Length: 169
Image 1 (cartoon, rainbow, N blue to C red):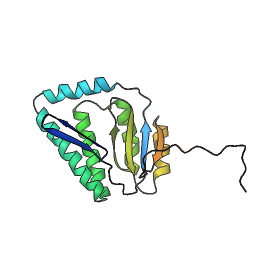
Image 2 (image 1 turned 45 degrees about the vertical axis):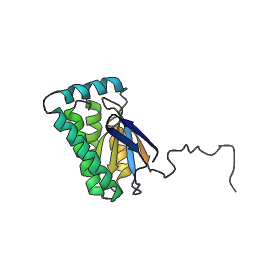
Image 3 (image 1 turned 180 degrees about the vertical axis):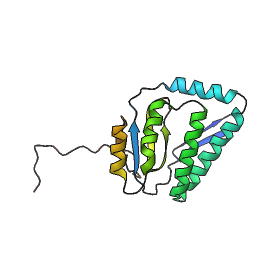
Image 4 (image 1 turned 30 degrees about the horizontal axis):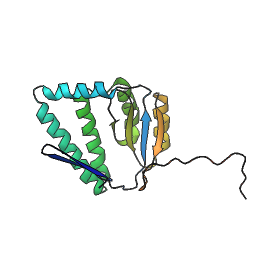
């Protein structure tokens, strides 16, 4: 467990997600976003009729996603990413630039969705095996700034290039 928090009758626990060793791609839309505005949009939508059911669907998708990731069920994770993105559209936090990147990625992606607060920002994509380079090209043509990501058990770390003045033997 990384941390836990109890608020009223709800307990939240953060722990490391299982890592099946897949390669992911994260692409930045170039659109700055406001987390506060995105949160307000979600709250407004969830206060409307059908909001509690929509929230329950988010919980279902997230819970199934955790189980699919733990089972290394790539098809399940990909499907749930797509379902989550549809829910994010319904609450109004997608953006035309996000949609453009997701559309560009679709032919070579198993699953994709926005990541972070939405309303701009970035997307995360589970590329089809062996199609990573093609995906990067498609995202660049669509105006995204893309990075290949491989999670590491120790978390993120900065890997700096070797000093250009040094020589290797």
